[in-house]
Image 1 (cartoon, one colour):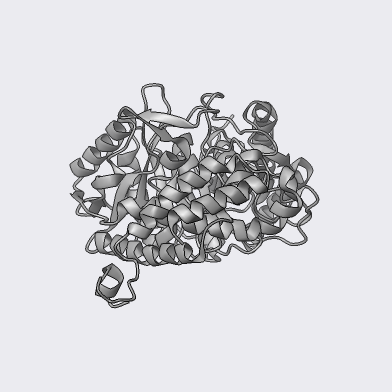
Image 2: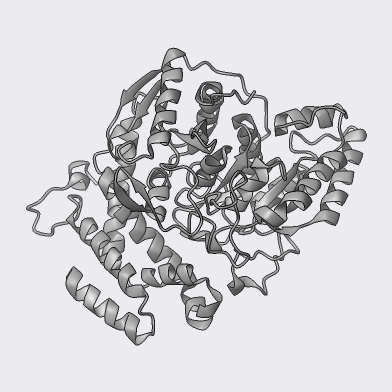
Length: 58
Length: 451
């Protein structure tokens, strides 16, 4: 799921649950998730990118 | 009248030689609580009768030659997240208003066996999910030096109790800095032991893979006494070590890049004092430091949401509004992102190990700002507004992820007299060595020596 797709779904769900105050927190979380997904240790099933975990043999 | 012992070590000597009684020491603490608690809101429950009975028993045993050790007869407090048999563990939440503990948490059992006197249970940020102690069913705890400021959190009431003489030590918990942040804000010592060293059974969880239990005290020696008791070891007097020749790593980038100027100045002065004493201080790097906050957030939110899911659905209005919203946020984290965060945690753990290689400890500030004002959601640093939650967690949360033992201890004051704290981080599995090093550094880090 893309960050945008996730955020749209999460905000909609929060509104459905009468929690509109969650929207700014979810937007903050989306920025944090984007940073997490951009980290160079993330797995790549193609094997084309070798992150710090692979380099360390784990 | 004899001077009142300031530390556990001093009190223990006086109790053992019967220069003072536990009953008298306990009465002094109860009197401090009676005089100060209405203003500071540090305690949510005070056990006067039980504490007096425990103190009398301790005095009786000591008089009969049955001295149990340095916590025998010593008044201490507990964060109200920890089970004490026969009493409620509120977690500062209305969600737990019907709870009564059936058993002592193992850490309480150890303290009870050591003869400690339990004076009461302390206020905290609801369910330990915050760093200011503002969101509590009992109302905010207040900083001992300025009632308009936070004592830090989540173990805020615990820090107040120790800083003001209401107790000689307190047992707190630390999932992102909740022992070290209030210790730094209130000018005392706080120890987060290594991950898994001290039992967390009987302690309301926040994040089961990052929760730690540890002491808040008035000296490193006292922290060592309580730590050894919590581990089930026999507390022994530790040989005093020298800082000469000791090697410290300073993770300057990221950790020293966003500090209140007065915190930065106090920390650098403390570093100068250590250098002058013969210690070696070298800059080190944590290459993925900028990823710490996202990694931490995805783990703590997901694990906290899992624990609270049932009551978030059944009793949502019994949470304080802010804590409820943060817990709800965790319910939206995807499993794949949680796994990414766990992978990042491994990377960070290895980077901290690498930074410590060949060194005795890492040295950095414990809290980037002085105690924040209550009701403020952001503080200005270097011209930009930083959320209080982010800035208070910034220097401590890494070591909850990696599990390294970390010790907060005073290293100066702001112009207004607010405390500034430093943090020493030790090697995995070597908390006793960290405590010995902390004891050696204490007099140099603290402008007015603790001893």
